[in-house]
Amino acid sequence: MADNESSKKRKRAGRRNKSHTQKLKLSTERESTSPKAERINEEATEKPKASASASAKCLKSQGKLSNSSSFLDKMKAKLSGGHFRMINEKLYTCTGKEALEYFNDDPTLFDTYHTGYQEQMSHWPELPVDIIIKWLKEHSPSLVVADFGCGDARLAKNVKNKVFSFDLISNDPSVISCDMANTPLGSTSVDVAVFCLSLMGTNFPNYLNEAHRILKPRGWLLIAEVKSRFDSTTGGADPKTFTKAVCDLGFTSVSKDFSNKMFILFYFKKKEEQDSKKKDIEWPELKPCLYKRR
Ligand code: SAH
Image (cartoon, rainbow, N blue to C red; front, side, top):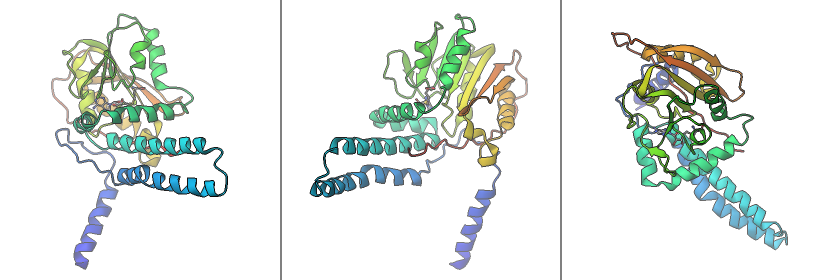
C-alpha cells in the first residue's frame, strides 16, 4: 500500500518535471481535465444562490435592503463570471472535436462564453482583432481571408475583404459553424489565415495544419495569442520553439510583435515550395489562458 502510494507520488513528480516541449500526438484525443472547473461550477450554481438569499434576509432584518437590486445584479454578474471561467477552462483543456460536441449539446453555453469574453476584453487597452483589421486595411482588399475562431465576426464586419468566418457555433448567417481543424474550404484557396486568441484546443497544431492546407503559396498566417501563454518564466511556451514548429510546418517567420501588454502577434508566410520530406514537428504545449475573477 505504502509502496503503491510512493510509486504514485513518483509518477506525479515525473509528470511535473516533464519538459514543456513535447510532441503533441495529433491523433490522440485527450480527455478534459477540469477539476478546478467543477469547483467553479459548484460555486457558481449553488453557493451564490444560497448566500444571496441568506444575505438578503440578513439585510432585510437590519432594514438595509434599499439597494437590493444592485446587490442581486452583482450576484448575477458573479454567477455568469464563474460560468464563463468554467467554459473557458473547458475550451483550453479539450480538443476542438470535444468543444464542438460540448457547444452543440447546449448552444446557450456559447452565448454565456461570449458575454464573459467581451467583459474580459473590455478591460484590455487594445484588442488584437483591431490590430489585424488595421493590418488588412493596409493591404489589398482583394485578399481572401479565413478567420479561424471568429467569435462575433468583428473582423469580417470591419474590412472590405471577402472573409470566411469559422466558429464552433454560428449565431450569424455569415459565420460557418465547424471545428476549425476541418473547414469546408478547398486547398490553396485563401490569401490570409487569421487566428485571433483562438488557438484554444489541445490539438491546436491540427488548426495550423488546416490553415496551411487552405492557404495559397506565399499566403499570410497571422496569429495573436495571450502573452502569458508565451512567457517561459511562468510555464508558458518559448516563442522561438513555437515559431520553429510553425516554420517546420511549411512557413517562414516574417515578424513578431511583442509591443502589446496583453498579447503577442506572429506574422508568417506560407513557403512557395514545400519541403519534399515531412518533418516530425516538435510542438510546444500552450498553457491554458485562465482569466482571473474580477
Ligand atoms: N477571434 C475572436 C474571438 C476569440 S475567442 C476575437 O478576437 O474577438 C476564441 C474563439 O475561438 C471562440 O469563439 C471559440 O468558440 C473559437 N474556437 C475555439 N476552438 C475552436 C474550434 N476548434 N473550431 C472553431 N472555433 C473555435
